[in-house]
Structure formats: structure tokens, C-alpha cells
Length: 201
Image 1: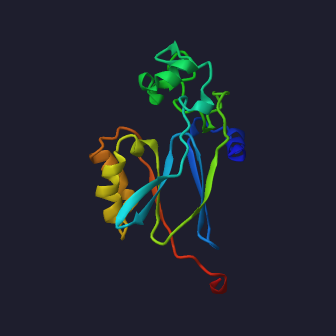
Image 2: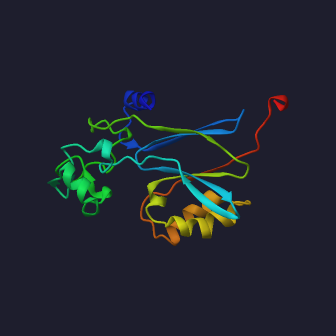
């Protein structure tokens, strides 16, 4: 992550981005995930004739316990760690900032964003996760996750499209039409394959 961050700064690219990186070891079908900020990856697996959702990302915003600092502001007012810890429902993560003007970023980690010196680029890697045949991994931006209910998404979108079809496109459509998303919408889907044995390589 730090290497990517350095490349962005060296090229003087303005702005910044969240990121979700996936690595699949094809030799044994194991999955590794690293996430920065508030994009997310989830794994959908068939179990006992049901589709279950397995979170794969650690969300990073100013309400994250590891990223709480003394310079967090909510609507221009300084917020203490005690307030965030004891009354998180009063301070929505999307409205927390690291500048008193209230116009800072709502994520505490990102790539780029040269004007925000306090941001970190360290990300926790989730894995190894053993993939099973027909597992589906869905990567999506907060424009999707913030506007859909997980149970409804699984029942009306993921489960019907597990057998085939453009799941990523349907997820975006569902978030926009049903969830009334007003944010940017991005989605990517990977379907697990059968393990390739060494003799087949």
C-alpha cells in the first residue's frame, strides 16, 4: 500500500482513493484480502441450501478504535475519544472529519490525498481463506454498501445470480434503483474455481 501511495504522490495526482486488493493462490485456492478505508469485500457461500455472507474487510474511518485521534470533528465541533466510544450513534462516521471546517475526509486511511498528512496507508491482510467451488467474492464501494441491506441483497440479488449472469451489474443496479444510492457505484465479482492439482499444471 505504501508503495502505491508513493507512486501516486510522485506523479502528483490530485485527490485520493480507497482500495481493496485481492490475491488468490491458484495452487490451493486460498484467498487473501487487504482493504484501505470504506470499500468492502464479502464472500458469499452456499451452506445448507442457504447463501451466507462472510465479511472480508476491516472498515477504516474516524470512528475506528485504532484511528481515533484528538483532532476529530463533527459538524465543526471537536469530538473526544470518550464521546465516540460511549455514544457512537450520535456521531455518524460519514460526517466525522479531521478538520474543524467539516470539509475533511470521512475516511482515516486512503491512497493519495497529499493534503492530508495524518492519513495512514497500513492495511490489515485477511487470510488465508480456503475457497470452495461456487464461492462468490463481491468487491464494492461504499456507494453500494451504505445503501443496501445485507439480507435483502443476498435474497434478491446474490442468490439468484450465483448460478450465472452479471452479478456485479445487478448489484450496482439494485443499489441505485432500490437503495436510492446517491454515491459513486462500483462493483466487481470473482467466482471461485475448482482447485487445480499439481499434476494438472
